Length: 315
Length: 315
Figure (cartoon, rainbow over the protein chains, first blue to last red):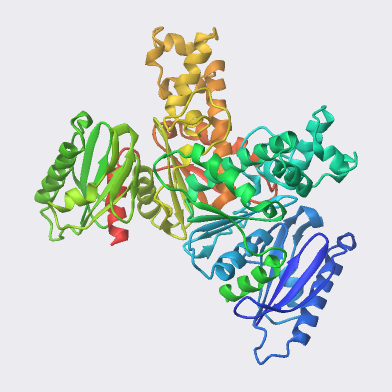
C-alpha cells in the first residue's frame, strides 16, 4: 500500500493506493498557499496521517509519493521551485521526515502522471514513452528504457519550456517562445480573445454572452467542432506548434508513444486527428514510422495514482 | 579487438581498435558512392578484411561496428536512409553477413562518436550526456543512464532536425527551421555570403580574395576572433540558435554534459564562452544549474573509435 499526494495550487489531494494502482480512499483539503510553505507542509502531513489511519487492510503503507507543480532535487527531496506556490528551495522531504519514518519520493506532477499512465493504465506495455499534460500550462513526463527521466539536475521532462517559435506573450519562466505559450489552455484562450478583440466574428462570442473572460478551452473546442472558423484557427495554431514540439521530442528520444493528458486532451479524437495530419507533414524521414499519439486514460486522479506508483517503483 | 568503420560520403575509414579504444591500425579508401550500395558494401568488406589480416596481436577480432551518416534499424541492421549516399532501405548487415560471421552493429555516425567520447575519452564518467557534432550538418548522440539512445524506431538523437525557428533556407529533410540550418558550417557559410552579398563590408571578403565560394567555417571564426563585425554577427546567430537547441535538450532529458564536436568545435573556447553566456540568459529556472557545455576531445578519429566501442558495449 502506498500514499500518493497531488500537491496543487488549489488543493492537496491524497489517496491510499494499492499495488495495482487502485485508489481505496481519497482525502483532499485546500492548499491555502498564501499561508507559506511551513503550514502547507503541516497540512500535507495531516492528509498523510488521515490516509494512514484509514488503511484497514492487512497491507501496510510502505511509502509516500508526492507530485509537485514544479521541480525538485530527486536526491535531497528539496523543492527547488514551484512558481504557482511561490516556493523556492523548500526542504519538503526533510520537513516531512521530522514527522514520519516512511520513505518519501518527490517529483514533478506531470512526471508522476506519466508513471500512472505508463505503469498502471498501460500496464508497463511501453518502455519508451512521453506524456504531455496540456492544461493551464504544459507539463511533461519522459520514460526511457522503463525508467522515469528527471534529469541530472532534476529539470528534465519540462517539455512545456521547449522553445519553438515567436510567441504572442512572455512565458511564466520569463522567456518568449515556450511550447506552453502555444499549446496550453492559457495560450488558446489568449489567442481566441486576441482574434475576437481584433474584430473576428465568432460563435464563441455568443457562447460566452459577450464576456470574453468566460472563454475556456472547452468553449473553443466546442465551437471548433461545430465548424466555427475562428475557433478552428485557434485550434490549428495549437496543433501546429504542438506538432513541432512532438517532432522535437521524436528527434531527440524517439519514443514508442506520446500521450496527451490535461484539460485540452478532453477534445479527444478531434484533436488527435488534427495532430496526426500535422505530424505526417512534419516527418524528417518521410518513410519511417514515428511515435503513436494517443489521449491519456487517467483524468483527474492521475496525480494521486502516479505519485503512489512513483513511490512503489522507486523503493 | 574490434573493427570500427566510419562510413562517410567521401571515405570508408576503418580501424583496428583495442578494448581501451586505441587505434592500432587504420585503413581508408574512397567511398565512390556514385557506384551504388552493392559495390560500396563490397568495399566496406574489403576494408574489414584488410584490418582483420593486419591484426598481429593475440587478441581476436570480436565484432564490427559501423557508423553511418543517416539512420538505421538497430534490430535488423538495415540502413533506412542516408541522404548523402543516396541509400534507402539498404540491408547493410544482411549483405555483410554473407561474407563474415562476426557480429555487426550499425548506428548513426554522431551516435557512435558520442560513444567514443563518453565511453573512451571521458572513461565512462558521465551516464547522462549528449554530443552535438557541428559539421556540414548537425548530428547528435544521446546517452541516458549509460546507454546510447537510438529510439524506438531508430530515428532518435537526430538533434540537427530539431525545429527551432524560421530558417533562411530549406533543410535537406525538406522542412524549414531545423537546428542544422542555423548551427552547421553550411548554415554559417550561407549566412556570411548572404550578408556580404547584401553589401556588408567584412574582412572575410579579402581573406578569400573576393571569391565567396571559398568562405569556410574556419574563415568565419578566424575573422570573428579578430573582431570582424559581420563575422561576429554570423557567429552570434549560430550561438543564439545553438543555445536554443541546447536548452531544448536540457528541458527534455537534462543531461550532465553536452559536448560539441565536428569542424565548428575547432573554434574552442571562443565558441564555448559565447554559448555559456547565451545559455545563462536562456535558463527557464534561473537558480538551477544546467548541463556543462564542453568541446569534444576526439576529432577525426571519433567515428572509427566510436564504431568499434559501439560494437564492444553491445556485445
